[in-house]
Amino acid sequence: MRRIIHSYKFSLTIMLFAFSAFQMSCKKSFLDQTDPTRILVNNYYNDSANIATAVNAAYASLRPIYNKMFPFTEVSSDNSYSISDGSGNGDFEYFTITSANPTLEAEWTYLYQSIALCNVVLENLDSIDMSASVKSRWKSEVKFIRALDYFNLVRIWGDVPLVTTQILSISDAYQYGRIPVSTVYAQIEKDLSDADADANLPVKYSSTNDLGRVTKPAVKGLLAKVYLTENKYNDAASKLFDYISSYDGSASSLQTTYSNIFLVTNEMNAEIVFAVRYASSNTPSTGSYFTSQFPQYNMRRQDLIDTLKANGAADKRIAVTNKYSDDASGYLDANCDWIVLRYADILLMYAEALNEQSVANTAIAVPYVNRVRNRAGLTNLPTSLTQSQLRYYIEHERRVELNFEGHRWFDLVRTGHAIAVMNNHFSNYNIVFNKSGAIIQIDAHNLLFPIPLQEINTVGSMVLPQNPGY
Image 1: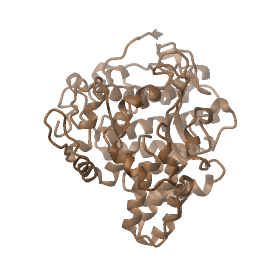
Image 2 (image 1 turned 180 degrees about the vertical axis):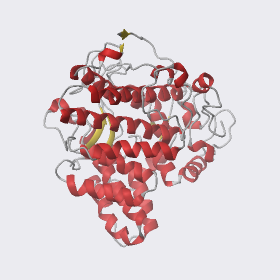
Image 3 (image 1 turned 30 degrees about the vertical axis):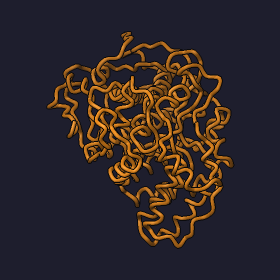
């Protein structure tokens, strides 16, 4: 049986069938460039070739998610601002976002489409007659993708619907209401722990055709970030120690030159732990938006410029003003990958986890920050720093090192500093809401974004209540 659907609707009801919206037209190494845009059910998932198509589609589903991620992670922070309000991205800058915002709705929809694809694979894979080791690996890869999707969902919206199986009826779809964040995190941890325990998941791939697939370091790195976000510092430190002791200098290493990390001619280099892959190909949905849209929606705030300059001219990161440059690309069709995790992030997370564990660990944590600083051209921090001093330096280094890579807003919320940092930022730089002239100030309700209005209207506010303050 085949069911062909050519458009997307409400993001939970699109999950009603054993389907995938296979807009998988990406070819960056292993990703298929064909684009059947088909929903195939029942008998379709009956051999390894067809289930491979579904796995590749799960990877491809990350592309639209990360094309839309920067308003949430950068424009909402003290890093960047938008000079184009037409698509609603300016609402993130001014914290005037409403539940009718189109970017908000699109991101929710893309995330649940990706989860639906993952659920299709996980429910059909066991019945396929194929290599047991490949089956196990594919299962782990897709669990990683589903965990990443839910990690983004809870950080953006808090309590969200938790769907881990295919939805096969309309009545079932309407039963999925918001689930506590703690329950969603438990599922994220389970998916990643399962993948981490899989002996068939490789540390790295030898074939360039497989670059971009989930690896064991990617699983450990994401699981550590999840633990850190939950303030589970012991678990985070343990997982990051495991990562660094196992892969430092082999599977993972810092690039010698900071700017080389982001070259389209050096993608999937040894510093990249996991990236969403894009390819300029004149095929819809394969290329990245970043080269075209970052100059519109991610102008550096003066605050970030001043922060970069605070380290002095020796800091090589100041000169890297565009991490998503691809001169050969067409509009919305660049080759730039979106780096989800890289090794500098791993080192800084380990320093943070150690420092938050105990004041006794502060001196042990400092060298991991210094590795990142040294590559940037800066001198060592002393091991005599206090816990609070190192906490400041870690947050500073994360902002400078990872600017425009989708970390800043999540870092501020995770550390509990978002309200104070953003309000000081607005006041210090006299940033006003352009309609009232009043200096912008945020409060606790701004730490989460509003649930899209279309979702609430479809299933009802009793099933999907709005976040407070919206």
